[in-house]
Length: 135
Image (cartoon, rainbow, N blue to C red; front, top):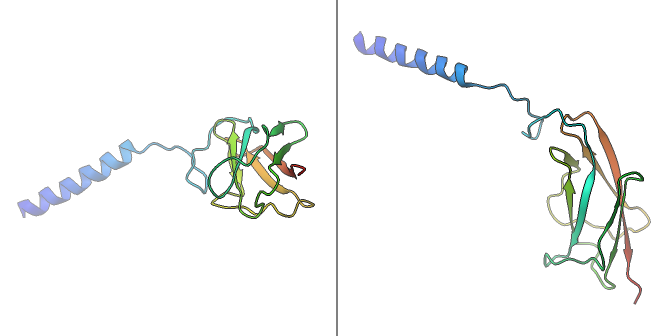
């Protein structure tokens, strides 16, 4: 009987401790913290080949007003297996998520990526325009 009382007491104290220590931080569907930040922009962009080396001929031009990223790649670059890397303002996230290689070979239909602010209320869609260096 004494063992049961101790067990019930230990379970009760553990449950109280768990409830008391739980902090309610809001998170989104990806498990990322939702903050009060409303800023929403791309600060830098990199484009890597399948060997994880840059394929850019020069720095990408990120226009936060026109919401574009213009980047020129070396002649002969395999546009079907590139790895884009976005640098975003603090607490922002990108959709769609980039999980590997991306096919940029359809130059007439540039890829679009949406930056979402830390408070998840502001969304801005950037168009990534790729051009190939002349031979």
